Image 1: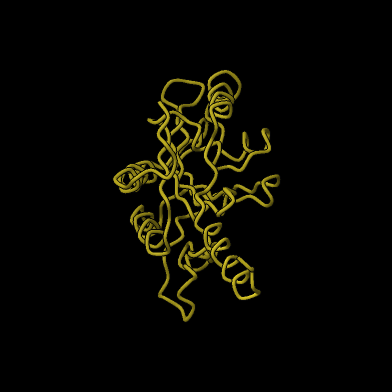
Image 2: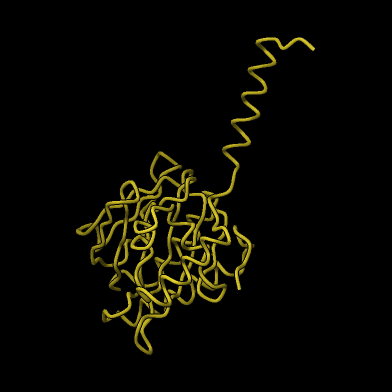
Length: 215
């Protein structure tokens, strides 16, 4: 069969659509072993960008490599991104958290903040605007169409009772868009953030997983 320019264009569009629908990266068996060893024997309770940088992997690979009881990830839609953030709103506008973002997977920024609260819808329906401290704190504008997975992770720290708990939003390539940490092992958390995390994590856990569950 002769391949015409029109057919090539159609095949290209189909291939592009298929690529856009590909899931975020999930951990292989070897990567799962590396993640488990890191958190068990090397640096328990570290925030996810730390091992992602150490392994030079997309952060979603690290999140998906954790044991099933410590990590739950779901495929994201713009509506789900908004719904999950409204659940984070309910943690309370005066609740202290730590916001974490990463540039290129190598440069990570973590800073204390009050919970950024969803603002009134602006003209661009693709953007989710969230402001902290009544607008006096951080202003965050999340492109809901670019978030392709959301993870709730609850990782034990080195000492008994320590946890690192986060809600993380990932791009198509598995890189971190933004994470809200309710607590980080070794730091003193806000009890309201811990209670809020439990409710948001339960919402995420009620949905189908984006990667096969790991025991």
